[in-house]
Length: 272
Image 1 (cartoon, rainbow, N blue to C red):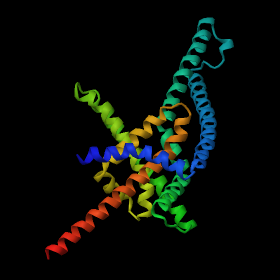
Image 2: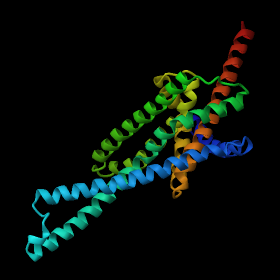
Image 3: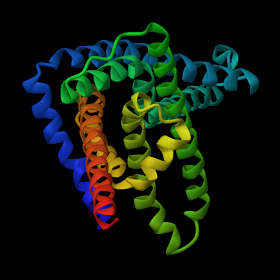
Image 4: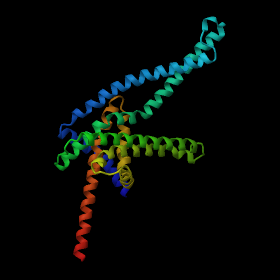
């Protein structure tokens, strides 16, 4: 029951987050992912094309198929076809890798903006002002990047393990939904961690809190992933909306736990 209740919070908080952005006029935060995405797409796309062409040229050179003009006709055709096929396969492969990890790349690059946005949401909710400290800001930004890299590493290891298990009949079929849930969990964790920073949780404490409320992380990551399916605008909307949603959900849970703790303490005093 606890998981599904938290999962509902993780999902519904996106609706609350959208209303919160509109009410408090936070639309300008969506500009930053647009600029980052444009630069990232151009740089990433041309880098992938260049890398794929370099691999193809190096392979052809290794087998001595670089000077097609001095080759017999059939070998020249074979070299041309080989270059075309291998080039397409490599470019598609590299693009798949870029697409799989672009969410983490965007999160790393957007980390400073997401940290500031989460703090701004906290300030509005609790009607308090966090004084800007450049040193603390750099610390929080680096922590956000570290958590994202940590989650990416864990997810990669789990993916590799599932690829091995995936060859086992019946059991292997379960790896597909499991991998989706794992990806959602780690995405939600990354979004929630921006609030943990202000609570002065260590990364380990943040991980324990996330495991306790794993439903919030999975629900947040689930909506994040669904938004990412929207061409182009998905990468723009997902990080901003999901970090607002995660901040609202974590603050709500912490408030509920504080009230529950006060009630238990009050009952204890009455019994005494």
